[in-house]
Amino acid sequence: MYFFLLNLSLLDLGCISTTVPKSMANSLWDTRAISYTGCAAQLFFFLFFISAEYSLLTVMSYDRYVAICKPLHYGTLLGSRACVHMAAAAWGSGFLNALLHVANTFSLPLCRGNAVEQFFCEIPQILKLSCSHSYLREVGLLVVGVLLTVGCFVFIVGSYVQIFRAVLRMPSEQGRHKAFSMCLPHLAVLSLFVNTSVFAYLKPPSISSPSLDLVVSVLYSVVPPAVNPLIYSLRNQELKDAAGVVHIYGIL
Image (cartoon, one colour):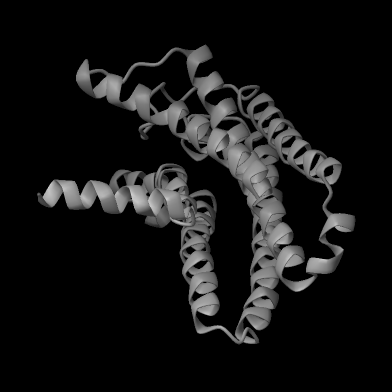
């Protein structure tokens, strides 16, 4: 569990660091400029971290399913080597996905200005600047990516359904409450990420607006990586105790 959480924390940190610092710097310096190479690099790292994180969350849902529903087979199905291979596959899939999208997107001629109506370089906004019919290739890749995202989400939900069924059979009410308090916030954040990202990449152009695009992008690119560490850290009793001490001293 802690091995996967370590990987998740690194991905969350990378995802936030790719978009937020540049946006804050632009706000402080009252500019919206980013170089062509910088835009490509930002898009690559954002897609890399966000894709790898989603793959890792899928792996973690399977890890929890085996740990709760098949505890006697956990050592056989998910040994240390298997966990390393699964984490490596998550990172590798994120890298390949990012490389494919960035290479395809920035191979398109951009002839409709150079203003990206977003706080970071995002594929739908870059495609708006293209006047080539080749952009349909990238649209096709986005559709395939969204379908894979929805498929992973269905797998995650299915895993948690099995987990909830096992939890409901627990004799301890405290154990059931602990399991639900841990799983439900994670599913809520994951649902927010999937719904907003699917909406951002597949919404009809007729309902697109700069303010709506900004809100949706923040909801899927900033909120989940920022909230994930809080959700998972609340499982740590030592952290809870430390927070309690800080709260008491704060009152005093």
